[in-house]
Image (cartoon, rainbow, N blue to C red; front, top):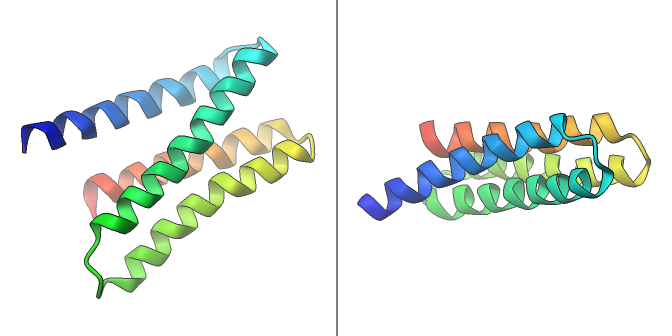
Length: 104
């Protein structure tokens, strides 16, 4: 039980730090790295949420999948050179996924 709590705290702190650096750092290489980390974290949180829910709770699994899709939509916007919108979608994926993982 203690290890699971440590993992939850680590994911939360890492996610918030990653999002903060994503919007504050101006260097393009570091920004690209932070964006990649945010997208991967959003997808990881979505997978963790889907796998932690019971099999008969389909609605919450679909909602968790939507949070993962937000990260992928952010990648599409990044390819289209809409960087601010890509950051918002990737960040929303992490924040909404963490809210669902921690509270629902």
